[in-house]
Length: 101
Ligand SMILES: [Zn+2]
Ligand SMILES: [Zn+2]
Image (cartoon, rainbow, N blue to C red):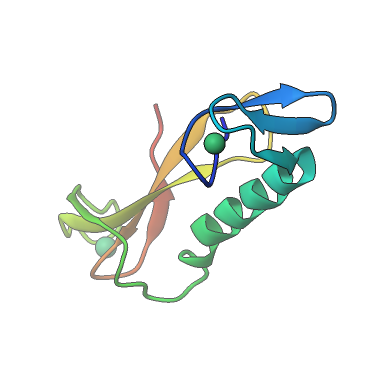
């Protein structure tokens, strides 16, 4: 779903472009792809072995050391048929694990 940068109305596909139903603003569909990639990179950047303060903390028990606080985040796995998976990282020992559902 894409929204008009001018008036925030919903953009609808028209030929190879997206057009605002409200004000007529047009954009290339290519812009949409770039925005999606940026969003994904943001999600991965916080995991990369560094301690990132912006991650939310949740009450969950660490299977490694028994600490009951862990950072968590969502990550889309590579295979298309898997939905988002929740990952945890212990605030104490740094162990990272995924939530099994
Ligand atoms: Zn518009
Ligand atoms: Zn731990």
